[in-house]
Every structure is written in C-alpha cells, then in structure tokens.
Image (tube, rainbow, N blue to C red; front, side, top):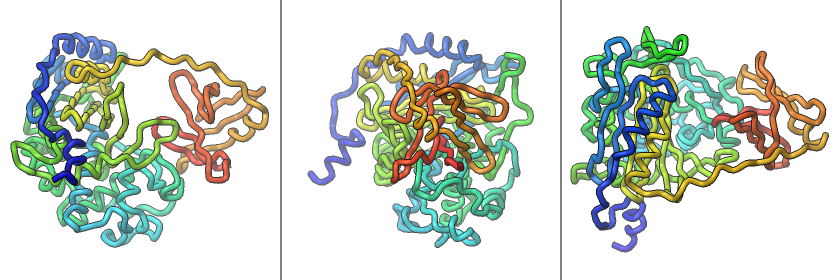
Length: 449
C-alpha cells in the first residue's frame, strides 16, 4: 500500500478533515467590477472542492440585445482550455495501450511528410513540435475538415526543429486531435465525447455548434465602437476544434475538475484512469523566462505558495480560465462572453476565499540595464514564424522592435530579458550560446538572419 502513497497525496486522496466553509461574500463584487473594467457582458463561475460544488453562479447578461441573465447551466465556447481535454483523449489512448506518447505519429496517421510523421504526441501536447502558430476562426464545419487540413501540410509548417524550443502551437493540437481521431476510430468530436464527456456525465458539452444551439447559450460578443456587440455569424472552424472549440457550462466543467483533482474518481467510481491526470500534470517543457512549465494541455507551477495546474482560453466571442490545486482537491472555472477576456481577478478571489494562499508579493520594479554595442548587435536581426516576421534594430545603443508599421523600444531588465510597456520578451540561446529565438506571449520566433 505504501508504494501508492505519493499518487494518493498528489491528488489529495489521503483522508483529510473537512475544509472550513468558504466565504464568498466578496466574490460577487470582484466579478462585477472585473466585468465592468473589461467591458464584458457576463460570466459564469464555479468552484469545487473534493466531490462538492461549493459555488455555481452567473453574473451579468448572456445577450446584450435581450438582457437575458447568465445562468450556470448556459454554454460558453471555451477557447484553449479545450487543450486539456484533447490531451486527456490522447493520453487515455496511451493508457489503453493503443499508442505510445513517444512513438512517431506516422505509425498511425498516413500521408504525412517524413518530418511531420516523425513527430511524437509528447512534442505535440507539450508545444515543442516546432510547428508555427495560427488560429483561424472561420472554416469548414464537417467532420472531414480536420483530415483535409492536415493533408495539405508541408514542411513549411515548421519554424523550428522538433524539440528545440517551447512555442505555443494551435496547429500542433489539431494534429494531436487527428491522432486521437485516427487511433480511436471515430471523428474527433465523437471520440472525445465517447471517451471523456460521456463517462464524466458532461451531458451538454460538445464541439458541435448544431448541438450547442439546442441548449441555453451565452452569446459571444466583441467590442464595436467601445460597446459589446453579438458576433454574427458565430465563428466556427471544425479543423481547429482540438485546439479551442468546446462548448460547455460551469456545471459540466465542475464534473471535469472534480474528476481531475480526485485522480479520475467521480461519484464514487473510477471513471478515468488516474494515470491520465498524473501524465497530463507532469511538468515537461520549459517556458522561456518563466518558472512554470507546460505539461499536456496545462501549465504547471506555483501561485502564492499553491501548486497550480491551469490553462486559459481565448477565442472569437469568449474567454475562459480553469485553475486547479489537485493537492487540495480544489478547482475554479470562470467563463466570459467577450473575446479574450479571462477574468483572472475573479479566479484569484475564488481561490482566496477557499484556500487562503500566501499574501500577494509586492510588485517588483526593475531598472533598465545598459547594453554594450556587442550585445545590441547580438540581439539585432530578423525573427520569423513562417511568413510572419519581426525585426530587432539597434539604434544609438538601444534596441527597437519593428513589426509591420509599428516600432517599440525594448528596455533590457535582466539576462536576455526585455520589456516594452507591459509586454515581456525573452531571448533564447542555442547550445553554443548564440541568440536563436525571441520569445513573447508564449510563442517563439526563430532568428532568421
């Protein structure tokens, strides 16, 4: 029995005293203020601990035209929080012995170029495949769209060598989704429904817009002349479903979080093997300039003394965030109905109400560091991801980033670390010590010249 103790501790399954009642009295004020500050029509919030839903509540409106109130059972479209479900579907197939996470995917997917075929599920799920990033919102709606999309790919999809650097790649997850589809023998949406949504009782969760529209739905909004407006037509691209397109509610997502933090146990039954969640949560890829690491479909790290597993999501009309502390059997999900809004202050307030994390650290002030002419010359150059480029130009001992018609000055604040306003840039060096990549916003750009 002792050999299983680390796993039980990791997922909080060792007998514990019942947690004290959470005080959510401040949460409503935080949500409403953040909705106001971000000009977001509405949000839904759920908090779980152990096998209980501590809170499930809607705030604001689902539709600015009708004023219909948000309710917890309403569906939102998640964005990249979808990736943890795609990862789970692939890892579950590995748990079942149907694939290996470290074998070439070409053993299962026919018609790929040799370089694409040599990729592994591990590289795709950890964003170390070297595949460039894009996120087209509009495209085909049929189940063949994913296969048709990948069939067009040539080696110009790569901007870096596989395993060379961490760089967030939505298309990498499309390819991982095709792997799940091919090995599972069902269209991707049906494969995830059969292997994840169904066993967890996530009865309204779906990738399919024509199914989602039969349930209460929070409309997606964007800003037009500074005011939220419903997006018409609603964006959909079936080829990109594995990277960010699940429709779900905070009620259904509460079941996912309870299963995750309890090692696959839900309603007293082992519905998903515990190994799926330990594999997903294992820190794998180093994110340049960050303490946190990327696992499979989740970031893994520490926040104010709490070991955290999390992911955010942004897509046309919606934003989302899921944050979990498996060791405390805790999770919070916040869904918003405006493009790219994640409402992190709301998620933080929910965590503070239940877990009492360490005090927030004081903001650090970092003074600019002067550069030598040799340093400026080493950083200067053109950085590329496919056809997209940006250039670092040295002027008078300073460094400027130019992209399209914009130019911003970069201030050096640490070793190979720069700031431009609130945006952070990190230089990544190769084994020989030469600057090889520029990293910002989760994406890396290869130094082309």
